[in-house]
Amino acid sequence: QVQLVESGGGLVQPGGSLRLSCVAPRTITSVFNSHVMGWYRQAPGGQRELVATITSGGTTNYADSVKGRFTISRDNSRKRIYLQMTSLKPEDTAVYYCNAHREFTDHWGQGTQVTVSS
Image (cartoon, rainbow, N blue to C red; front, side, top):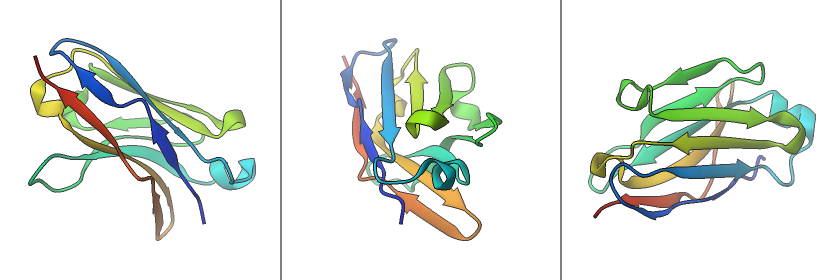
């Protein structure tokens, strides 16, 4: 089991920035490194959708809606991933979830709320 803990959400004005963090505190490094890590989000009334993923080697993938604005990164030694979000828009408002994926298994964090509003 991979426990994931997110932090860094909050209220921000349109055009602002936020940085989300996710840590796997009780996972040994080799197990963490075997997972593709990612961020997903779910807006009110919507389905959970992919935001970005990153492999242990640093290969990234982004949803078209966030390309050029969001950056996912990973620190394997600290068992952490980050999501740097810039030029935030009201439509980015959602609960953001950290995900660890390997083969047919997914682990999820509890989510952190991001609200973009003036």
